[in-house]
Image 1 (cartoon, one colour):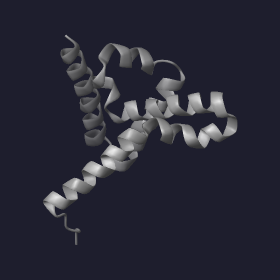
Image 2 (cartoon, rainbow, N blue to C red):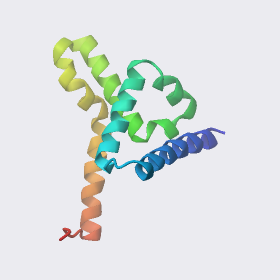
Image 3 (cartoon, one colour):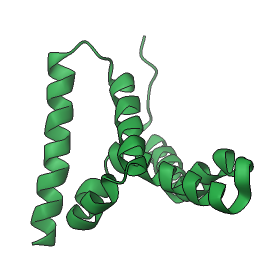
Image 4 (cartoon, helix red, strand yellow):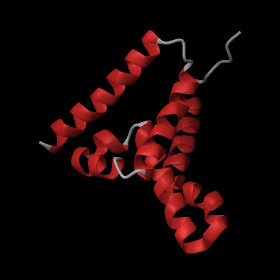
Length: 118
């Protein structure tokens, strides 16, 4: 049942974003930023953690989950380190995901030989 919930929530998020891309003139980069900011706001007001607990990876893997992770990191760092935590917390909390994206992106570029668009 956990897999079905994760698939349904992740699929719903992806479907809503696809509708947003198809029905508006927003560029993909702006939509990505919108999702991260929405995840941060939902985490700040306390709505995202219950969804994350219920849906698991279906809510944690999309960009909404990244925004929530940034928020949690900043909140914990501000509580423990004060003002400096604003700058350190988000990167500390999401460092594994950011590092993974860089490493796997680099490996993919070695395997598939990307070319610049003209």
